[in-house]
Structures are given as C-alpha cells and as structure tokens.
Length: 74
Ligand SMILES: [Zn+2]
Image (tube, rainbow, N blue to C red; front, side, top):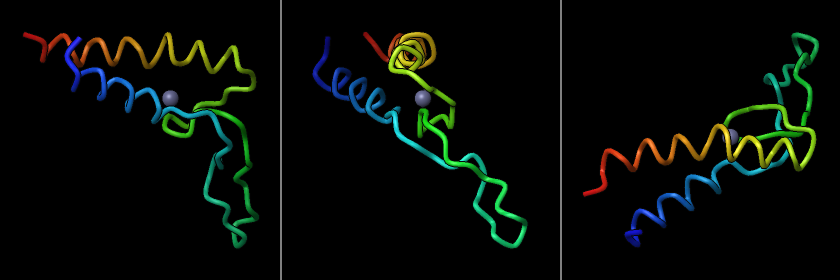
C-alpha cells in the first residue's frame, strides 16, 4: 500500500477513539439532560465494551476507509 494512503487510513482509524463523551450539551438551564457515556467520540456512538468498539472499527470504519481509497488508488 502507498505510504500516504496507509497514513491516511491510520489517521482515520485513530479518529475513532474510544472514550467518554456527552450525549447532549450539558445545559444547566435546561436541566442538564446530557449524560456522559462511553463510546466512539468521532461518531458519538455508544460502545460499552472493547468488543463493541472493535466491531465498530471493523463494520463502520473500515468499509468507509476502503471505499475512500478505492476511488483514489491507481
Ligand atoms: Zn466511530
């Protein structure tokens, strides 16, 4: 694989890191309906386990990367 494509793929995957995020803006005035949940920060997708996270990468992220590259590869 081309060096730059590999780098792009790695950056895309790393964008989807597993951390905690807020489902909605924590607005105190509106009663603070947002909750802190674990999941993919880039997609705001709930992921409770390491397995779910890996599935997200394999099912949601990888096809997107391949689709992107199939258009640019020579
Ligand atoms: Zn994601």
